[in-house]
Image (cartoon, rainbow, N blue to C red):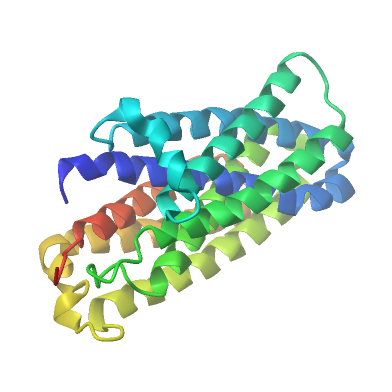
Length: 286
């Protein structure tokens, strides 16, 4: 992988982390209201907004480092009808503005849920579409290791997995320990979701390493990257399952602070996976 690809690793991971948190916030909001009350749900939602807004801004800034001429970044919006990259940029801008708007509203005082929820639901839909656009950018016929059905699946699993563990951290950080009963329940659901997603990723890794798709043979796919970066793949798998193990420890021992190292393990695992993704870039044909 070339050094110029590191901004893409950071950009995609940060943005997918933020979008995953938005998805989890909207998805679990009703559960929080029923189990912990409106005040707690509102507090968790506020934490998510204050975290995702700066993450999206950082993601936008980091993405500029990949451009040969950052000052011409606005030209990327000119080809929305034909370019997945332009669509990604447009959706990214709208999503960032929406979350920043919510964050600014919260700075000036309490905000009605009637105002927040429609915007967050819109942000959820934008996030799902944005992940698809991000993955479509890499479905190139000239890069067999990327041009697979597993690429969009991998991007979605990373988004939801990072969002799940980050949401667990937000719940533990923003809620008094006295409310630990419902907190343990929600952490259990998040842990099961994380286990399911890591399982999907394990299948994707196996498919990528040992099979080709369409006209591409294994030698044209991801195998050459495996030979050079096998330790990175192993590190990713080990960290992912170590994180899941710690997640289980946090739930069964009620030492909920363990979710912090869980998040770090999963985050580093996903960074390693995204590094490997870009490292397998090997163009064939014209």
